[in-house]
Each structure stands twice: as structure tokens, then as C-alpha cells.
Amino acid sequence: MPGQSVGVVEAQRIHFSEPLHLRSGGVLPSYDLAVETYGTLNADKSNAILVCHALSGHHHVAGHYADQPHNIGWWDNIIGPGRPLDTDRFFVVGLNNPGGCHGSTGPSSVNPATGKPWGADFPIVAVSDWVNAQARLADVFGIDRWAAVMGGSLGGMQALRWTISYPERVRNALIIASAPKLTAQNIAFNDVARQAILTDPDFHGGHFYEHGTRPVRGLRLARMLGHITYLSDDQMGEKFGRELRNGSFSFDYDVEFEVESYLRYQGDKFAGYFDANTYLLMTKALDYFDPARLDDGDLVRTMARTHRDTNFFVASFTTDWRFSPARSREIVAALLANGRKVSYAEIDLNFGHDSFLMEDPQYHGLVAAFLGNIKS
Amino acid sequence: MTHTLGRPDFDVIAAWVEPGHRVLDLGCGDGALLKHLIDTRNVHGWGVDIEDANVLAAMRNGINVIQSNLENGLKDFADDAFDHVVLSRTLQTVRHTEGILREMLRVGREAVVSFPNFAYWRNLRSVLDGRMPVSEDLPYQWYDSPNVRFFTLLDFEALCEQMGLIIVERRVLDEAGEIVQAETARDLNFLGSLAVYRLTRPH
Image 1: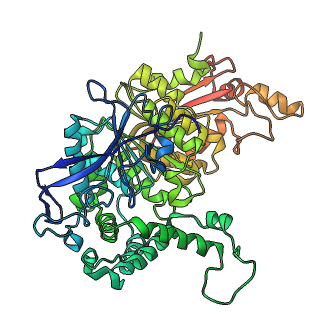
Image 2 (image 1 turned 135 degrees about the horizontal axis):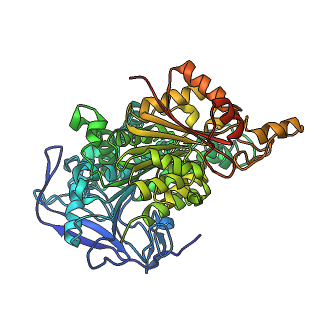
Image 3 (image 1 turned 180 degrees about the vertical axis):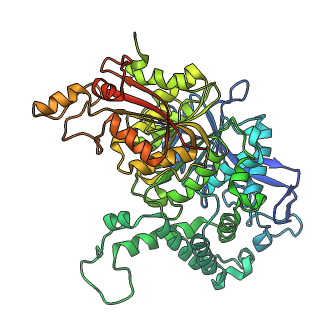
């Protein structure tokens, strides 16, 4: 692996006392954001990169905590000295979005109005709300314009939304394995995941905290389903095939095939720490995302709202069927129709939607080259 | 005369574009032509290439590059989006010749096409000697050549006529990259190694 990890990092919590008015009509009267930063913000504050997280991500993007050497950030392989997001040059900011469950204000936080966890009463948050919260975070750091805003999947939607909501505040945008809106199939997958949670008897209408339970069965199923859609058929075939754990059929419903073992493990692990209400919120934010609604569904007109000097890098992965290359190309076509400065790569990686988290010389080479073109 | 980056057709193309023009380069390679046009003519440029290594090299050159297969057309590009659409030494590698020419003049006001001329006398002599030509402008062996269409100046002009395309300008270069002067198209066809055409469509 070229370059190095950023090493030991620390998270911080930043309090925002000004209410955040949400697209759903709801309001967060005040809120905290969990944030990590890597590298050094330069004197004119022109070297900052915002990394937006996807469905299950958070602020711990790179490095590890001093007391948890194995708790490595979710996108560590792309951030650090000598890596594409070179922390010798850039100041990288990661955060946990409002509604999250990793330290930012979310459904498991206490609702100041009731003194009890928000639970299902936590207002629905949209991608545009997250971008507004991120803009306030930029203000805290004194960052007028991001050198780059970057994200994969739902994170890519935030990067895209930044260029529409705050065009003058984004010099470069990296929109990876993303889409201008979800397809019916994608919404369908999300709804099955939500139904698994909502129908779990331990969900208690979202107020499970008060009952001392967690809807782990629903959350586990939601994650298992999601996980299938993040991988490619070929990759699952190569990794698991029809391998049996015990070598022969046992003619019962216990774990037999290796793929079952893997999925159950992933589901159990996820259900052990993730908040069910946050999962519901994140999937709704995905479903609602459709910035072209600003312009009667015409994405070309919406992309006209972006800044003519913003450089875009849009990337997709050949085996990603959840956010297929065709979806990324819709963004590219709309940018091209406006004469925007855009590059697009279709990267041949075998890991399906999860490819965006993988390390690959072509993929990381392109990100490094794109960011390398940023003038100091 | 010395030529830009050893690519004499670049200078021909540079003379045809104006500052501020939008230029799309199909099969842009490492983006050298676009970089040249941006640096010397101050154009707005975009490149298209299918090869990973070329997309990476173009990105490193600071060029806007779209990874795409030309055989699938230019469906991501809107009508009249560009002043010039360039296809430099690439037409002979594309199967859907008519399709790509039509697409170029859909998305662009003008098309610039350069290609190696198979009727160049040295190429003809090579074939008469019993071997497929290998030259400055046809640098491949028959077994590793990306070329799938083999045609001459006269063939190309006949196709343009058949398709109703208008030839605005024509420059023919020899193997040294010097402009070839000749009385007739037949003579140019014999003396030219590389042809560069500026095309448009009837309005």
C-alpha cells in the first residue's frame, strides 16, 4: 500500500445551538456533530476536503484511536501522508451526520423537550439537511470554500448536493458510486430493509430504548439484505461458491453454506452496534434524494445551478448493480450539457457497490491525479 | 520545421480552433492534443477514451476526460454542445464509421478527422513487396494493430459525399509531417501519409 495511515486520531464533538430547520418541516433545536480531522488547515484555509459518509458510515474515516488500535477508519486506505487524500497537503474533515448513531445527535440522543431518547420522534433528515449542517461545520473551521467535497454512494449524493446548494463553496467534487436519485428497485430494497426493522416486535414503534430492548432481528435482516446488494454475483461466487461448512448437506435450517455463515456474521455484527432508527432515517434520506425536483425533474437544469469553475470527478464501478454506471452517467451527461468541467471513469473492480471502499491502483490513481490538479 | 510534440496534425488542428471554443477530442489518449489546444489556443476541452491508462494519463495532464466506448456513440453528449469534435488518428479503429461521423456532427458544429492514408505510395509499395505497411503513421504490425478499417483519402471523400457531409478544409501531410502540395486529389492520395479533414454538415 503506497503512503501511510494518519496513525492515531481523536474525535471531537462540536455543539451547534442554532436550530437546524429540516426539509421534512421538523426542527433540531440544537445538536452535536462528532467530527475528526486529519492534516493541517493552511493559513488561507484553502486546503480542506470534506469526506461525506454513506449509509452506515461516520466521522471515523481514517487512522485509529490510541486505545483502540484495531478500530481503523472506514476509508483509511485513501487518506494519509502519500495517499490520494494526502494529509501532508490537505486538511481532511469527516463527520457523523445528524441522525447518525456514532456521536452526533440522533434518535438515541435525548430529546430536550421530553428528557427521553428521541426514538421515532426524531425528525426525518434529508441529504440537503446534512449539507446545511456540514456548511455550518465549515463555518466553524472558517472554511469559505472546500478544496474538495467527496463521497461514495449516499456520500456521493451529499457531494453532488453541495455543488447545487452551495456552488460557490466547492472547488472540486468527487461523486463516486452514486446516483442522481434512486430507482424503484433501489427504493424497494430499502423498504424491505425498513419493514424488517419496523415489524420486529422489539422495535416498539421506534421507542425501544425505553423498553430496554433493541430490534436486533430486524436490523440483522436489513443488513443481510443490504449486504447482498453491495456485492457482485461474481465476487460472491468466487468468495463462497457453494462451499459447505461441514462438507455435506445436513438437511436442516442451520448454517450450511459458507455464504450463509458470512451474511449472518455480518448481520449480527452490524445489529450489535447500529441504531435501528438511524438505519430507517438513512434509507429514507436515500429514497428522497432527487435534486432535479427543484427543476421539474430536469437534471440538466439542476446542474446549471452548479458553479462553472467547479471541477467534477464522477466514478462508477463496472460490477456495481446497486448504483450502476448508467446512473453515474446521468450525472455526467447533465454536467456536460451545461459545459461543466467533468471527468468520468468507469472502474473495472469486482466488488460491486463496495468497490468504492477498495484499494485499486487505477481508482486511487485517478483520485490522486484529480486532487493533484488542485492549485494551492 | 519542428512540430508540436512530434504530432504535425496538432498544429493543423490548432489553426482551425478559436480561443474560447469548446473542443471534444474522441480517443484523446493522454490528452496531449487538448493540452496543446488549451495552452496555445485557450479552448475549453473534454476528452473521451476507453483505455484505463489513457484516462489516468489524461487526468494527470489536467484534462477533463470521460471514459467511454466510442462504438456506443456519444449519447452522453447533447446536440451542438461543441464547436469542434476531433477524431485524431482514431477513425480507422472504429467499426461504426458512419455512426461515429454522424454523431460527431450531431454534438459538434464541426468535425476534425485525421487518419493514416493507406494509399500513400510507401504503403502501396510495401504491399506490392508482399508485406503490410509499417510506417510513422501506421506504426503497428498487422497482428497487433488496433486498426479495423483500411481506407484512403479518396475513399473517405467518397463516403463524405455519400453521407452529405461538407469538407471545409483538407490538409495532407507526408511522413515527415510536412504539408503535401499537389494539383489533384489523386496526387495527394498518392503522396500523403496522414490526412486531416475539417467537416461540417449542411445547415
